Length: 399
Ligand SMILES: Cc1cc2nc3c(=O)[nH]c(=O)nc-3n(C[C@H](O)[C@H](O)[C@H](O)COP(=O)(O)OP(=O)(O)OC[C@H]3O[C@@H](n4cnc5c(N)ncnc54)[C@H](O)[C@@H]3O)c2cc1C
Image (cartoon, rainbow, N blue to C red; front, top):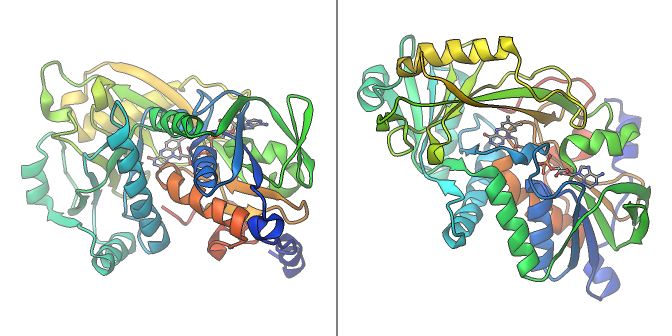
């Protein structure tokens, strides 16, 4: 990125809202996915008057947060910043889950397995050691003994994180939003159009606020085409669920963790049979460009075949089992996979939050907290989350 552009993107500076006005600030958060819902909740907790607006409601069917389950894990290779965020966020998720009527977090553990020692694994081990986080390293024989339902052919070792697991994504976001409303926040079903500094049109009505946060996931490039059109890459991602053998408990979360296979080539990942919904499997390779409004949400025949072949190879008991469900969702990727938590470079009082990049869900609580601090205290988060760091060339680095 050239330096002139960088200067433009970082030019606007905002004074802290509370210090500036001395009154209760009014903030509008647009987008009730995981990022917007947690931002609204943190702003409310900090004393702001908050309206959370979404065109289709919290964690709706087209939102990236609208899936059944999302993995939370601390294994991030060298990217300790995300290990820490995942850990801090997990504390919030667990508190919320403990208070909710149905579980939002299943502590199933997470198992990553590798065909050889690679930098990503070595760096993950180092980070966990440094942070004092439990991480078990198991060789092939130990893996086979512990999880006989997985065929570990070609696998040298695995890394198992016992404290992490699965978040029930859609339900969890609904719970955050419902709690936010119960505690005095306002939620409105409305479509937003950015107008400029401190102003937004909600279903045609012009509203002003001390701050407006756009947490619109894969819609951000449509709302800010000049700024984000080339900086956010929205890709089509396919997911399938398979019915485990009847009466077989080896695919239950008590017996099988969330998992990811790092054996060269494409990365596949999935979950045990959470709450009877089926064994989940997906390929983590970025798919074709995707429009969240009009994209076809039927899984391709080719995608089905790939997921079937992988499941049959690694989980032989599933080879003949029926698919129970398919989903197409989208990743909203930044150039390298880093999140976006920043203010708009020219429109005062406008803030941007997004770029979950296929790994953002788990970080919802921390991303929301950092955005609330940026809005209320003017405190800038890590430079990696800045708009200026987002390039126009798609080269994934965060895994
Ligand atoms: C298949 C798949 C698997 C994934 N797996 C994982 C995982 O295992 N672990 C993990 O941590 N993350 C995972 N992710 C990533 C994670 O789900 C996303 O990063 C996260 O959900 C993004 O949340 P968001 O709030 O930014 O966006 P969204 O959830 O998409 O929310 C944006 C909201 O903005 C609203 N909106 C948009 N435009 C407007 C407008 N003009 N007016 C009003 N409202 C508007 C939308 O209706 C939507 O509700 C996965 C994603 C996918 C697709």
